Image (cartoon, rainbow, N blue to C red; front, side):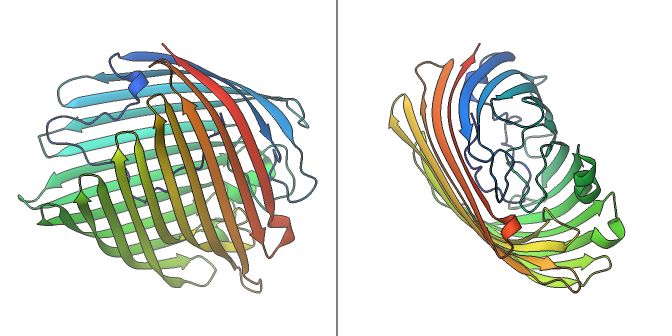
Length: 392
């Protein structure tokens, strides 16, 4: 099944761990046993398989996706999780290869040195032959596949009864399989952060944070590399057991090699209302500077992001979900090149039926739309799918 739009994720790494043991957030279908096997089959229709601005190619896509997951508490303090998933996509109308194989491997180790001092390290390695996020503005290319590795680490410890500190790091590696895309987009992004929190009230924590980011391209890095330093403050507040809000405001100082530096505000806000066990409403906003799909012409993009996600238990065995995101952005042109404005809207909805703990069937629809000052970067894409997953 083609996934719904992902919920907006703030630049934190992993959720904090509880006091008694290492937290192991795993799906309900994987709980109660160490090794879990599952297989997913589905049929989807994609109206624009290459994300082209013109002459779109549509296709039906058959998918078969087996997965193995292993979750185990090695000790009372140490948790290990590992998984491998293979996705086979068969297209009925695709130039070039019609059968694409994608691979996902993940590993996580979490350890509690004490009830309040924890470390959490995870790595996700992906070979994506049929990427869900396509590249607007690129010359039509039947091979947008890439290899991606993301390594995350987080260490948390208290200073006293009310205060604590957290150190976190992330390294992301991109390697595009097509040589032209690789020369333009292959890079490594590293992020390091140190934050402190203070419990002003039992339900309110004041937070201060510093982050340092490095973006290093493997080709023409002298004109595309950059570093950023962030300084921000904010708070996390539990309005009630069912309502939580979080916010950060700060400044980003970005240094670009061979290009103009910039100082920009940074903001991220989110809220979630969990009104029943399986139902919630979440929303958020962020203002950031991101990499673009065309770094040879644009240094980066200043983007506003707004999102709303909802999940509602229609019946004990039926769950409906929906998501909408809106992203107006300005691509920052290099010296002598003009900036361009874009507006991206992504919307999706799904209906899932869970007749037993082992079976999940889903129907979904997704729509992506990019409006841009540059015609070659425009995009329209619609996807509908049916799928079923069996876990044993």
